[in-house]
Image (tube, rainbow, N blue to C red; front, side, top):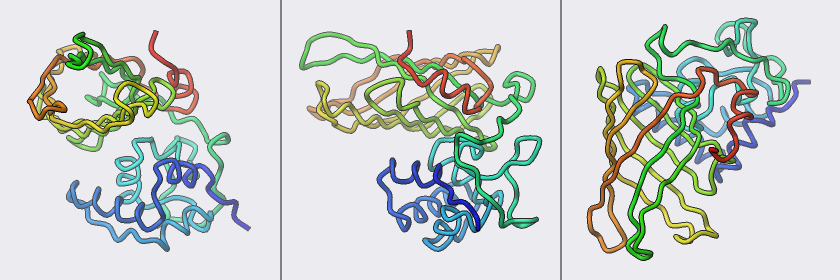
Length: 247
């Protein structure tokens, strides 16, 4: 009997999504990427029960976009080279829990023109209610599919959660950001969002630019934002190492 995929189930429940909601999010991600998929509740149930060892590539890419995690950290079976098994070619098997996942081979961001890996995100903003300027810092995981970047903060790196959805055009990175603030903090769990544009330095190890967003008085605010490269690996061991507040 196949072992249930506890890792995927834990990620979905942490996102507070039902299996139906999760399937709809996968469909929406595929639509945005120009790769339509037929995700439904039954498919999510098959993954979580372990009846299907790993998703087909079109679903794997959607899963990474929706969860912000590498497919190898979502409890799916892996091949010896660290790639997720394609369920079109030898599908149903045993799903490993996250603690037993094989570590994927680290990829060099510079060598392959990829921005994947762990980055330090830092932005500055002025708090009108406190009359001071502050900096927000998170360690984030960047995943890349073609010219699209999915950026999600590691939960232990800050009390707030951060997500960015970006597109790359040469050295220009453009997209949107969303931050869910700390429920126990000054902003009492308020959700803020806006746009962002960054320029990638020639080294490929730093992106810097500006964010724009609405304040509580419906005024348009802006400020600096930068991402600094930390590690090309997205293995569980690496993410565990960075799942802590930046120094």
